[in-house]
Image (cartoon, rainbow, N blue to C red):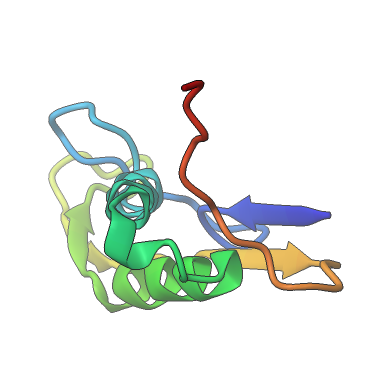
Amino acid sequence: MLSAFASVKGYKSYRVKNGEGSWFIQKLLTELKEAHSSKYYSTHLLDLLTQVQLTVAMKKGKATPDGEPRKKVIVKQMPCFQSSLRKKFYLLPPVLPS
């Protein structure tokens, strides 16, 4: 089983203002699109999630704390994943009928 979370338990995940999802979802989709290109088919899924985790953890943003609409604070986010995979898992290209 493999589970991925936008942030660790008890903490918030942050969204981009344009409504295109959280930092985690945006980076995950970017990595999956890159993995879909032929040169990335050799990328193990846990390596891909580790890259997402690193990128999101390095990101900083500004948010308004609950109950204080005039105050902005710097925020960070730490995604995490749990795996019980026993073998490497790769996303392979689709096989098209001939």
